[in-house]
Image (cartoon, rainbow over all chains, first blue to last red; front, side, top):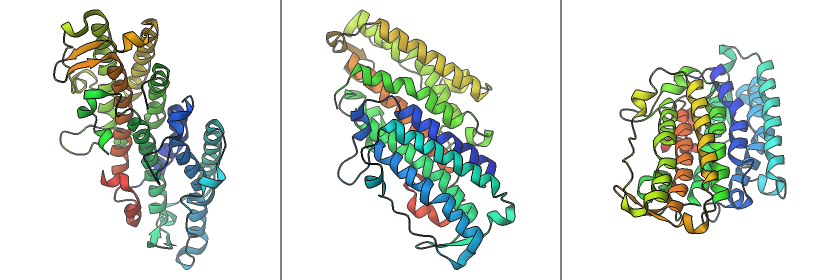
Length: 174
Length: 174
């Protein structure tokens, strides 16, 4: 499929509610378990998504619109949330993520992105030349990837309790 | 982690809202794309989950409670939804899934499952002896596995649009 701004907005709008539905009422053990050393818990993932709203997607879109290829993006700190989200209740993190996302989608709307602007080029510090359209597509896939991570981490907590059904549950092998 | 009925109920309650948030407003191309021959679209997955509510989890729990190991479960038809869900709008399927799930969770509640009952054994037609607790754990992981499938299938539609960012998006390689 080709990138369509409206489609991207539809998916980006749904992510905070989807994660809230998955995590909001969960008992703490489900939120803080991860997949082992140097892996993330659902709690960590929400912190990471918050940090992305603050420093990654819309800030980078603005750099592309303003500076094009002449100015590289700031590198994104993938683990900033281990400090910034520490000790906050999950409900607060989910609300923060939802508010930041709603604000960023409003900002995206006000950019009035035409096909020409969507093809505008910027510079990623490691990947080199990228387009605004590629940045927005990545925002979408990044969301989906972290939803998948959250459910994978959760499912692994029941690897033993499922008993012989393990044979049918491929998510436990990922 | 050990199985806890309350935890399982928390997750099972969240799945319909999570899938509704992900899919409700999406343009049709996102709903009907799959991963190639003999794979499922998000639309197919919701049909499959509906069929599970109707014929799998609670009906099997009842068989365990009533007959123990003396009566094997009916085999579950994993692809029944290709017929039963055909042509229905996604909003209707999501509503149906949410209603059936809510009813089944009420029914689960009325079973008053004590630790002894949770350890009760039944017979799976292929896997052999299983416990009620394992059945309920599997219900949870089955939900999470299909949420992961839905977001994976969706993300793959943007494999090309993300351009060089593909290198950072492991969900595209699954």
